[in-house]
Length: 218
Ligand SMILES: C[S@@+](CC[C@H](N)C(=O)[O-])C[C@H]1O[C@@H](n2cnc3c(N)ncnc32)[C@H](O)[C@@H]1O
Image 1 (cartoon, rainbow, N blue to C red):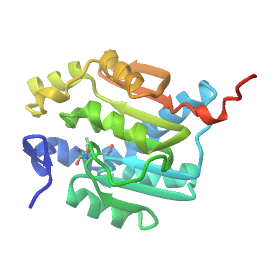
Image 2 (cartoon, rainbow, N blue to C red):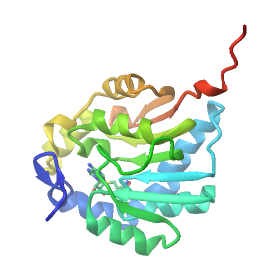
Image 3 (spheres, helix red, strand yellow):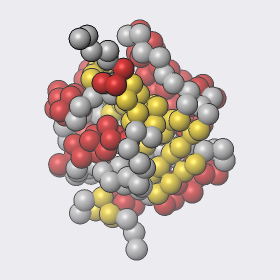
C-alpha cells in the first residue's frame, strides 16, 4: 500500500515534470554547486559551525544532497529519509554508506535528540502538515544542533502551478514569514534567513537552544 501525503498518495505528490527534474543531472548539479554551498556559507557567515557527527537529509529524494553532504562534511554517520519508496531505493544505491529509511517527516521513527545537523532541501512545500514536520525536526535535533533548510514559498509554488501546471497541496503553500514564525514556534532559533530569486526561493539556518549548557548564576 502506497504511503500517503495528506490526501495524496506519495507518488502523486511528486509527479510529471517535477519528478523528472528531481532525478535529473541538472538537479544534481544545482544541489552540489548551489544549494549545499549556499546553506553552509550562510551558516558560516553567522558563526554557526555544522557538526560532522550524525547528519540527516530529510526528504532526501534521489540522494544528490546526501552525496554532496558526504563529500563536503564527511559526517561520522549519514542518514536520509523520504516518504517515496522509489526515492529511498535510489538514494540507497547512490550513497551506499548512508542509512536511508522510509519515513514521513510529520511523524518520524527517530528518537528525540538524534541528529547534530539536519538538512532539508525543497520538501516542506510538498507537506500539507508542514508545521508538524517542523516540530518533528526540532524533536529529533540534538540541543545545540543545526537545521539547514531551503524551500519555495507560496508565490513560487503558485507560479509553478500557473505556468508549468505542477500541482501542490493548497495547505503546504506558506509565505516565508509564516515558515520562519513556525520554526520559532517549534522552539528553534532562526539564526539566518534569506530570500533569493525575487522571493521565489529561500534559505534558513536555525539552531536548537541548548538549555543544559547555560550556566545559572546563584
Ligand atoms: C522536490 S523533492 C526534493 C528532493 C531532494 N531533497 C532534493 O532536493 O533533490 C521533494 C521530496 O520530498 C519528499 N516528500 C514529500 N512529502 C514528504 C513527507 N511527508 N515525508 C518525507 N518525504 C516527503 C518527496 O518524496 C520528494 O523526494
